[in-house]
Amino acid sequence: MASNVHASTTVRVMRSEGVGSIEPLALIRPLTVSSSLSQRLVERKSQLKDRRFCVSCSPIRSESIEVTSTTASKPEQRPGVFDRLFLTVFRNKMVDEVGWDSNKPGYDGLIEVATRLMMKNRNNSAAEEAAVRILRSLFPPFLPELFKMLIAPIGGGKIAAVMVARVTAFSCQWLMGPCSVNSVDLPDGSSCRSGVFVERCKYLEESKCVGICINTCKLPTQTFFKDYMGVPLLMEPNFSDYSCQFNFGVLPPLRVDDMTLKEPCLDICPNASRRREVTKNNNTKQCPKA
Image (cartoon, rainbow, N blue to C red; front, side, top):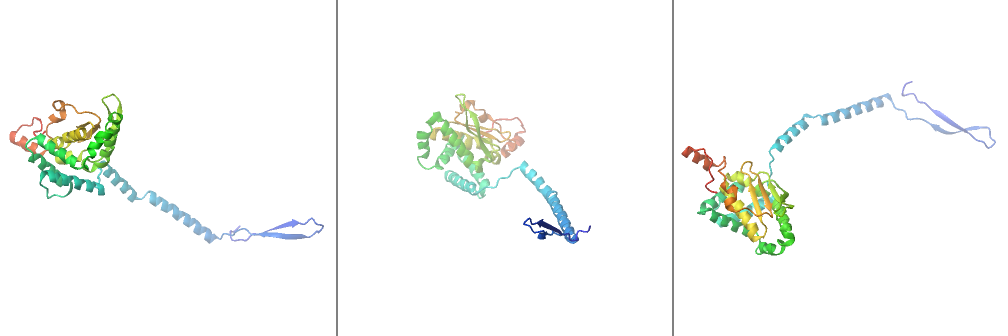
């Protein structure tokens, strides 16, 4: 039977009140769907299926996945507002100490000022003391002393170690790159989440110098936290993959026993390359700036 043929059904109900007549009470006509409307609905459904197929299998989506995977292999962090603010403040403090500024903007200029800090001072101890003064100038007066007096003694120093680890991981990524809080083993045999792991230190990689890392970062930072904030710190830079482990709550070894102070120059160090060319000697020796 064709779909456009109208069918009607009459429902009759018998009245039982002594009347033998039959009265129609309702007339129901089912909805009629024409063949043209039915065809349009089928075509519309087919179009929707085609659209879903195009979205899920579009080559544009495949390209975006490929770009994402390529980007993930080498993450690029764009500095935010606070990153630029911290960089500006730190660089200004370093310029005040050195008495000289670079013409280069941003992080490249900071590295040149750090290099001038090493060149200005006659020995490594003087460079380290200058870097400690820079760190102290970043804090409001009496704040480190109050922290050392009121916070550092609580809980055997663990609370203070955890606090400075979290602050370091939050506020220093502009300088070092991506980092995260992790657990470290303390001298009493316990473990505590008072460590900071730097995946690939930007300061070391950009300066290309073991001496700048040790004398303007590692040693002065250890000295500042221990002497002025009451929190022992051991920093363990890895000069092979440029990572670094901060161990808050752990005392550093004596300098004569610290193997990082005996590291040779980095392969990317331009001065080391020139020295090897002049002396024709490829033997690894301790970095002269360390």
